[in-house]
Image: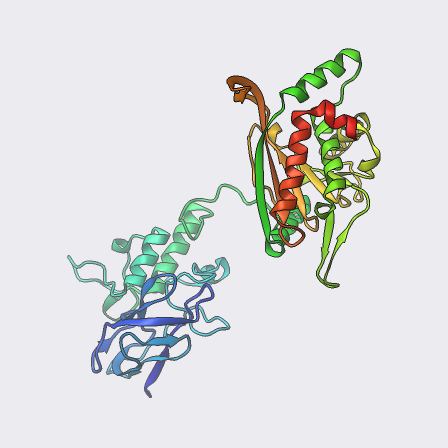
Length: 414
């Protein structure tokens, strides 16, 4: 057989080159299948590269310290007296894949692994350690939980190859049930990403991919707001705290319209909206949904309270309409009901901002130079930095915070 050239394999994870740290073989050295021939360093890790061929090293391509691109020649292997072997490993569209190295599909897929057949065992010398040359094969065995002591290899002189380890891992998986390839842990359940959960995942992924977001927050003294609600309750039905905050948010958006907008990348412009459809982040058994109060800017606190109760109930019952679940222009997220104080929420694409409110709890607060117990909550605003800078975002957040701390005077201006 002719000399075979082994090129630098696909290193995975988008890596296209590596530095040749040191050679592990010399010209004229015999080399076995899966035997390491060079140590290379990438942006991710340092790893030994195993040869897919058996034979004699005919040439080394590159000096130590040189940078090689994926697909460039690494070594040439001439045939030896033994049969030349090539391990059919992970042939991806980008070329040979580095044996045992973490690519985007480092562990063999279930289909490929189940297609593998366990090679016939070769006898092993009594008292010898397992016939493993490649540290990559040892690493694979550790990751998959395969006991090398229990294996005999299919390679020359009983050499244990990667294929032997994979076959053993498949056998163990079939015996033990579903196992996570990366950790070796049993899989408890598989949850299909469908329906609402799939839609939420797509929206949030798109938000993080497209929106350069920033977060700002402030602690507010909500004592006066709770007192005002208690006073209203004495004279009749009082709106909920969320409805009161929602009214302040709507007033704030009228003063800072940049946060009630859309970014139109196709037309290269920012579109400010006339009016507010206030979205309400609601946790349901089907996943996170955002029903919207259409024309929320036309409602007072009691009207907002009625719509919040109606939409929240409809969302949890699964009866909210498609229009109600997709028409918000700005979202208010009351994560305080989950018992948490703060959160850096993800903007509900294609909106440009989301305001979150944490739980209201007693905390020490300085009032008139004295430390007293007050009802404190945290507000956090996540905004699209394309539509405004921190001054606008901070101005809006401060407006809402001031209204919460002095609700009576704020209501006089609404």
